[in-house]
Length: 176
Length: 451
Image (cartoon, rainbow over all chains, first blue to last red; front, top):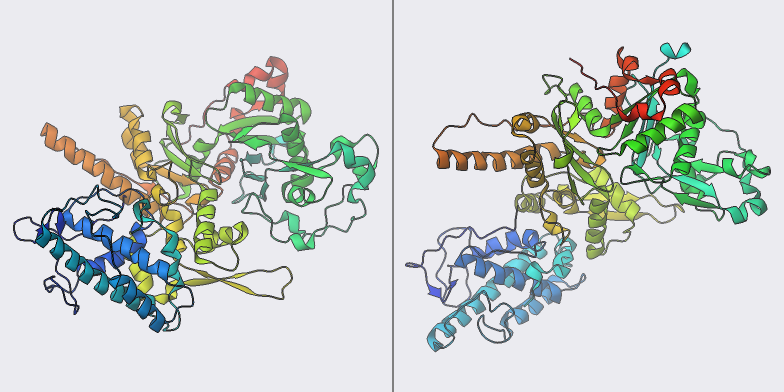
């Protein structure tokens, strides 16, 4: 059984796309261009669910545009975990992860992003690149907050060590 | 002619563990590592070789407990060797050796060196092996070889010269009454007859034998191994242990020794149906996280290890080798399918129908169920494809994986079953046959055809 794929179907006519990346709806209160999700389960939940399983895989075949968001999400979760220590409390973690989410980041397609071979986006179009950037900004913020909920579910003093153990795993041998 | 009434002796010498016992029993009388510790020439004279430890040997001697690990031994703290006073005398260096768990203990001292005479299932060092058998018979089983028939096991594709060598040792060295050498896979098939799922006692089936070092997939058709189709997988018990160890280290647990990892493997691991679902189950139900308490020799500090996702991730490497290794990527169900597809077409249905597990690394809970499910989906996909291409209906292939209670020592148990039958002695080659014809007599053994 190979690595797990996103279950979100995309259809190129109705969904908003930037290049081959799909801007899936999110359940979030952060400001940004994403549409509100209708269902209870959105791509962010899926990233968090699949993160632990997919972290073990080095090969991943992209089957749908949603998989590209999934890859980004999994790599970003890994990035977040690498900021935390075994003794980081919830409040410190909140600060750290907010900073990570708001930090300057490389948009897919621009130099500095590690996997430009699988993301093809219209780099020339300013409007589209701005849309993608602000979507990913919103995605990062919401993902970081929901990751915190999972990390501190048992105790507010320290994150779950079972999650932190995945810090050193590299999905597809890449990191953001 | 007392051997006609004595039970036959069944010896299964594996790469890791040796199983010894008498035919008709449910489980082997002794299970210990196939290891021998021999005296190093330079030090035998000076050491006197611990002859002072001639403590009375009681029935509760720790070395005679059955072991489950080829490399470690539980109660090393209470180490006193069984006495072997011969070593003190001159000219008896040949007799100064230990086998099994005693060998592991002896090798920790300076004067003995440890060796494993069997590599990859085949005997590498005949001199060590002969001494190993000698001790097995006289010190452990305590029998007279001339009063017993012997059933020995060999790996598939064992060269006939090795059989002759075995015959020479057993007939000329030990003067045994009679000998039968059986292929391990065939015995494993016979052991599955105890399962209620088995309806006819045929010797056709696929054996998945997973021990410590390597996993074999061996097709057997009517008692004959289909040699050209055998496949090996470089994933077995030791790889699972190492994977658990790496997970423990990533989490920064207090104790990450191989011994701890091995105990966790044996006590906590199981096969799940889907790893993402299993991760979520752990999130919902924290009861699934277990704790393992490390036994400590000094007893002052108690170490507690948390056991987490490795419970289901470790056996998963059979079904998803990618998560642990980067060079071998084919899942076990696919390998089994390829093996069967490489066999003659008229036996394939029988091979799919009777997939038998054997060896310690197949003991994980639900291992058989998962294998059956995955293999079934591979087979059904192929049938659906061929139906859609040809437009004809297939009669279908029944995939059945058989788990049974004797899986751990399946080969030995199968030997015990066959050797207790009345016909067994007629299949053996006797000492008289050997004296008349010579070692080449053992190149062929007639098959058990039991109904």
